[in-house]
Amino acid sequence: MIAPAMRRALLTTIGVPLLVAATSAQAMRSDLAMAVSRTATDLIERWRGQGQRSQILRFVQPSLIGLIDGTISTLAPIFAAAFLAGSHAALLVGLAASLGAAISMGLSEALSDDGELSGRGSSWVRGALTGMATFVGGTFHALPFLISNTQTALKVAYVVVGMELITIAWVRRRFLQVPLHRSLVQVTMGGVVVAGLGALIGHA
Image 1: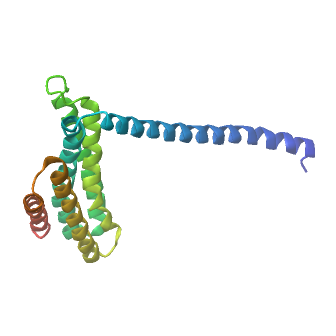
Image 2: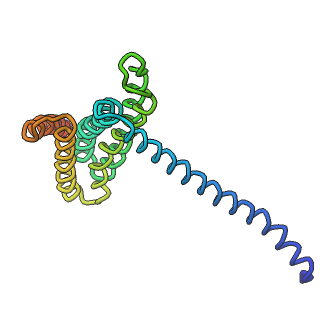
Image 3: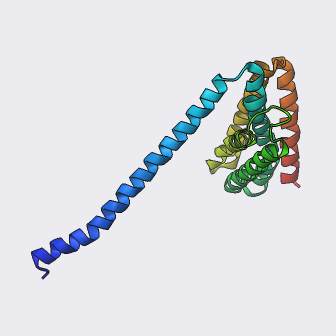
């Protein structure tokens, strides 16, 4: 039997480090949440402080480039993997393709134009926007493959891709003044071509 005094000392010895660790983890989560909130607030303030031309050059265009690339470029590997190996493979391939494309596109945007000559603002802000938009565009139509039944997942993915293409067309109409019907035709043709290539390879 352990004496009460020794038991209390043992519990105290174990409990204090655990309490410190829990407190530290909570503080880290709080700091991270505050940092994300400050970043979002800074981006909103920068957005509001720009004229329309600067908004398009510094924020809209980098985000739109990423969204288009993420949505269209990942269709071929995702659908090819779905037809070849099923839903689970398509999900993993989609996530991998989205992450790879996000890093590639973010670096490309950041390193190709420092903003000094073009007046497009911070290269790293543009790169971050492009990378995040690329990841979002590529991930959304990969998520339906969480459904284990491949045929059902494909049907849901088709709907998600359609919604993504409509969103891209709307953004182009809203900020770039591209007629909605023309934008829909352009982005839909690109999506159909790439998805068709994926389906052909998947059935090869």
